[in-house]
Image (cartoon, rainbow, N blue to C red; front, side):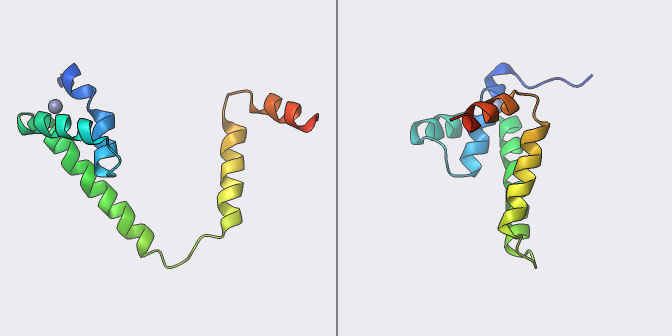
Length: 97
Ligand SMILES: [Zn+2]
C-alpha cells in the first residue's frame, strides 16, 4: 500500500499550485519555502507541477491556430449545462425581469 502524504504536506498542495503561478502570498511563499527545505515530497510535487505548467505554456504559445473566441463561449455554455447545480433556475429568474 502506498502511504499518503502527511497532513502537513496536504495543506501545501494548493499553495504550491499558486506558487508555480507566482500568485502565492509573499508570507505564505516564505513559509512554503521553509517547508520545502526539509520536505523532499513537496519539492518533488513542486518540480512536477513546474514541468507540467511549462509544457502547457509552451503548447499554448506554439499553438498553430488561434481558437475563435465564440468557441470558448460555446464550450463554457456546454460546461454550465452539464453542471449539476441549478443554473437553469438562476437563468429563469434573470430572464423574468
Ligand atoms: Zn511537504
